[in-house]
Image 1: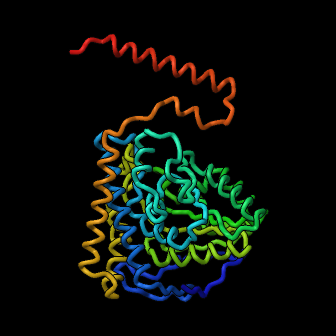
Image 2: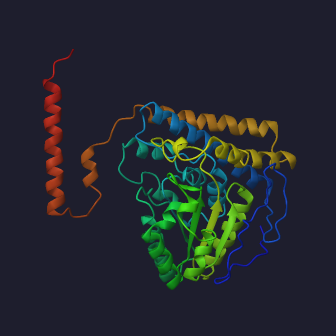
Length: 374
């Protein structure tokens, strides 16, 4: 993969996103970037997108059946997540929000571990740290500071890895993200802020979140490079992230990447998106589906065959089936585990809270045993 544009701090970002694949799958060169990938890498990214969508749907199904407490779908954002993750080194550290299922698929995280977290059967990052991913973060934007702190440590260690803060458009309205970007720029931390602009912060559209020309334009104020790419174009996202990662890795400091995409489903399974967006809007974005676009390109280039696609669909179905079998009616963890991983030496207040919860659980268990079977 080669690139022909150079990131640098100061210049105002191009408003027109970098794009290589047209909605119908035709490859149209963009003078700002060139991408050359062998067929095997194309197929690996497409397979990851297929698996991600299948797992995403199974998460939604299980939540609707009362098996998961909540789930935030990433449907429509597969190209952004798979393209960005595929452009990274395996030892680069990802700091996710909570919608990064596609990045976890690329990283090799067991989806069962992710499902257990949404089921509430585990209180932390089960299976994530082993794949250079921090735990998922429910508070909006707080993990951007964690990413920058980690990146500052990388710089002190003289390592050649980077940190990636995965945030949404809504997170850019949070003070934590402002502080993180400012710190990263001042200390030249090797950190890429990867913003999946899916057009809504829950129900608030982007136009009501900022008066900036784009999210990427915010980079100018921090003195870091900013760049926009078509987040529904996996090749454009791959090329943009690879350039940003190289810039940060080589001592250039932080980069802000805005991947312009769209959340096709509700914010979470507890949300009703019909209250704030129209069917016509959703339909217009459905025409830009990243899966359809990439499939058309791979078919046109004779990279994807009927046999290969059938194999990908079969694997995705098998992964989703295993995921369902292991998560459905999985036993709940011990609630007291919540206190085991807070401090090495528990504080008196924490010990008191643990004792209170233990006693309450015991009382509830006694009350359940006292109720005769009906």
